[in-house]
Length: 84
Image 1: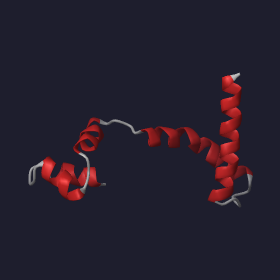
Image 2 (image 1 turned 45 degrees about the vertical axis):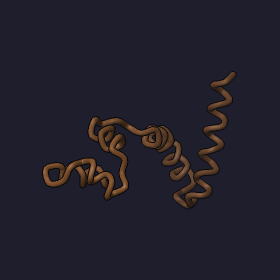
Image 3 (image 1 turned 90 degrees about the vertical axis):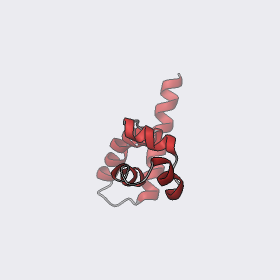
Image 4 (image 1 turned 180 degrees about the horizontal axis):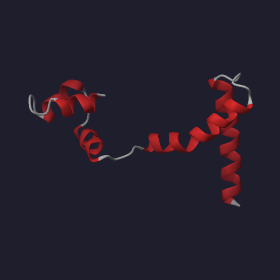
């Protein structure tokens, strides 16, 4: 959101000044502008199918805490199968 604001106002204020005022990193802004995908977004994209599956198979009754526990179990099993 901050990066979009900075982009929209580049012609009004220098990027460096906006980053300082908005407490955003210039490196982060330029990475965002280049279309770089962060580690968190990649992890979220990998986990989302598991989250949806747990939510669906439990009849949409599990909350975030229970879904997280079930997803962690799946990730641990997947990692152990990969390490073997």
